[in-house]
Image 1: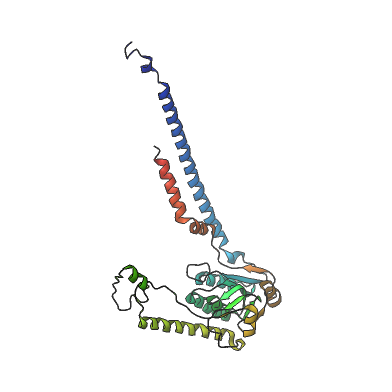
Image 2 (image 1 turned 90 degrees about the vertical axis):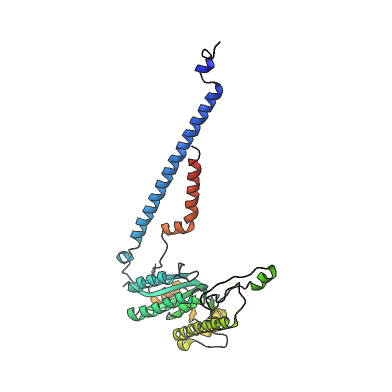
Length: 319
C-alpha cells in the first residue's frame, strides 16, 4: 500500500488528536484567564472610582456639620511627623474645622502618642493658641496611654490637661541618635572614602571618626531646641507647673504623679470632660482620616501592582 493510500494520511492519529485537544483546552483556559484579569481590573477601577466619589462626599463636613451644641474631638495618635496621620497638616486642618463649627462648644485633643517631630508639634501648638484667641473656645487635652515628648509639646497649648492615673506623661527633652562604625571598618579592613565640598558637609557621618567640634555644634543645637521646648511648657502651664530638678530632664511620670507636679491638671476621661466641663455630651470627631483609596495605596501599593504585572506576564507567555 502506498503512502497516499495509507489511512493515517487522511485521519489524525490518536496522538495527534490528543495534542489537538490539549492545545484547544490550553487555549480556552488562557482565554478564560485573560477574561478574568480583564474583569479584575475593571472591578478594581470601579472600586477606586467609587472610593474617590465617596471620599468627595465625606469631605464636605461644613454642609453636614451639626449645628446643635457638641464637643469637637481631634485625635492625636501614633508618631507625630510630616508623613504620619498625626502630621501638622492633618491636625491643623482638623482643628480649624472644629473651631470654625458654630455648634462646637469646645475642642478636645485626645492624645495617645510617644512623640515625634518638634517642628510638627511646634506648628500645631502655635495653631492651637491662634485658634483659641480667634474663636474664644476652650481646648482640653485628654491623655490616654501616652502623652510624651512632642505629644506633650502639643498638649501644653490646651487650657486643661486631663490624664488617667496610669498615663505616661512628660519626657520633656530632645535627642539625636545614631551609630558609629569606624572601629569596625578598621578591624575588617574597609576604608571610608567620603568626598565633600564644605568641611562640615559630612557632619556626624556614622562611618567616619568622631569629630569633637561637630559633636559640640550638634549638642548646642539640641540644647537650644530643648530650651524652646521648656519655654513652651512654662508658657502653657504657667504657675500650675512645679519645677523640680528632673522636670526638664527627659524623665516621664504616670498620670497621678503628673498631676502632683503640675504637668497635668486632673484625672478624667473624654466623656467626663464633655459631660462635666464642656456641658455638651455629644462628641463629634473632626479628625482627618485616610480614605479607602489612600489606605489601599499604602498597604498594597507597589506590591499589588508588581504582583498583577507578574501574573499578567506569566499568562501571556503561555501563547
